[in-house]
Image (cartoon, rainbow, N blue to C red; front, side, top):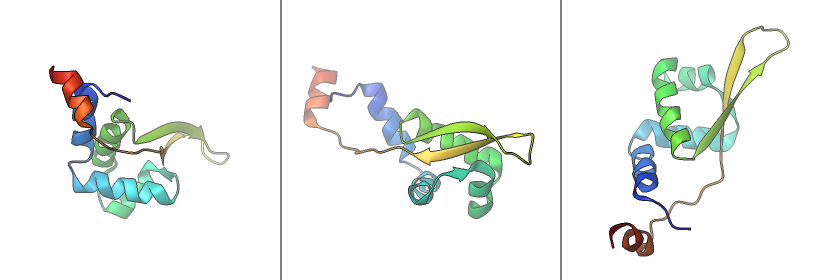
Length: 97
């Protein structure tokens, strides 16, 4: 699969922060509610949401909104998508030649 320059940049940016790497690890164990992730990382929900958006844009995670039986608020859950990251010289040749 040949990737575009934009896709490669999104992947690189997503992996360029220690919190995002930790989020990938946490989500590899099970899907998680965003507030649970924020609490475990000792970060605000807004900061965790920004990191998760980067990971989602790069294709590492996906999310969905759910209504819980005892709670009328929609809760956003995140889960890890299967991924295999590699950059091939063929990708670079296709982009720059």
